[in-house]
Amino acid sequence: MPGIALFLKLAEQQNINLITELNLPDDLGINDLDLCVILGNCLENAIEACSKINTNEPRFIHIKTTVTKGHLLIKIDNSFNGHVQRQNDGFFSSKSGTDHGIGLASAKSLTAKYHGHFSISFDQQVFKVSISLKLPKIIVAPCLSGSENGRPVEKQLNFFQ
Image (cartoon, rainbow, N blue to C red; front, side, top):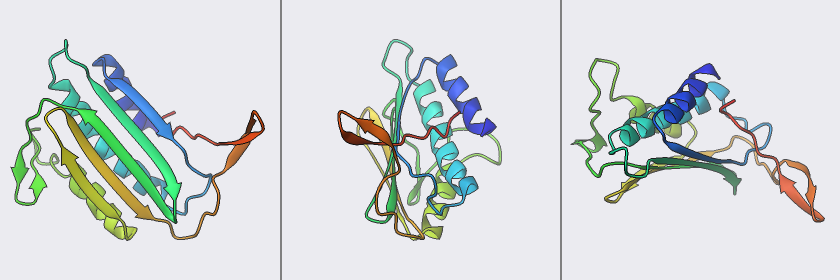
């Protein structure tokens, strides 16, 4: 996924602490491109928000995914400067050009495609996107990659490499 790798490099260049907790089974039944669009758009927005923070303040992005009760849950939290631009019931991008400002709308649209839920919340320092995608098939247990101290360990996949 070269597009995602580009965002990772950009985050590193801008001194953004990127923390990932990606716990996913091998086959979700969700189109890989759809998942990349959701994660890529959210990651691009998070990097943009972090880049507007003074360099002496903490810059972070935390992405967590998990599967539970027939849904893929995606949670993305990032630091930001506390300023949001709202437009009607959505958010307005501060980027210039005609192709900007559709990232969250694209993620929201794909969430609807998978009969899921999309929500945004924020306080003065942290912007939070929560997404739940209904999986087309029931995944009973997480994919296991071995054991640690006699207990199963969930397989962690890294979409960003």
